[in-house]
Image 1 (tube, one colour):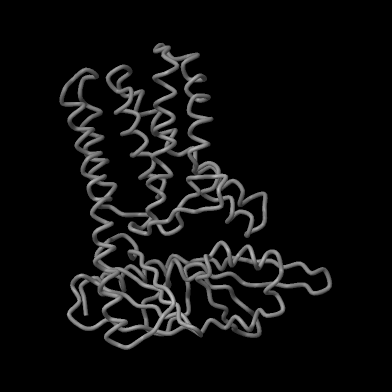
Image 2 (image 1 turned 180 degrees about the horizontal axis):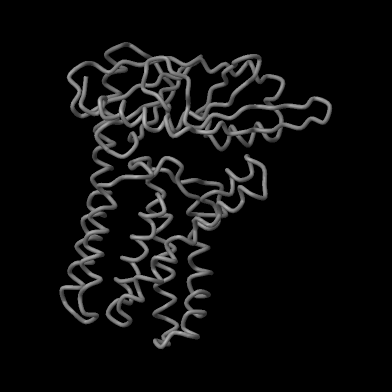
Length: 333
């Protein structure tokens, strides 16, 4: 999830663990702990694109990280804080560290929660920014801050915020299942045979859902809003994997394919090849658009056998255009 959400969640968890003992300082340390797992983005500055993608949401988003570094940070804080309970601070950091990847596991990218196992949990029920999850948590956290440390209201406000956000997260599982059945029915009605289907919410909401459907030669992309009155339609994108036949066995290409879980196409423009990760959809909802959120220029030097992937930059006007299109699409067809 986005940094603000993880800060707010960490603060609420910190309050739940130690708020009665140390007041708002529990929120302060919880907020810090909520941001620490995302420091893995530092890898972007020191490694190549493929390695950075593999590191992101890996070890720092695991149970192992929480078990090791929760007590370590708890010990450090207990050394200089007036409240000297090592156990109390260790529990605060442990739970703040652990709830961070658990929440991230509900997004499309997912987390390597069970590191070192090569398994990335991605339930794909919530977008990385979702106001309906964050705002109730934030509002009740603010109300909590202005209550006395031992006040009963303080605990009620914080628990209410956590309950509402968690209930919403549970609701997204139901919404995903409902959308999934709609896509299945549409495929059956159109006599489309497929190998597998993958669904996820569109940005900032859980009303509009997207689906990737794999067939033998292409991927079908479709969308469904709970306000739709027209049948679901699908747009086909050829896999074009023959374009990288000469690179298919390259170690970096294999790693990129593994990262994308096989949900990728290859496109060609101006004699240049691009690797398109389908899991995060398009930057435009216009039919036939090939502007993918995660699109990488493939650069290969046959002399050195060096293969590089360069992510194409996203422009502010792309996001503005997408938000406008999303609003129209959410209202249904």
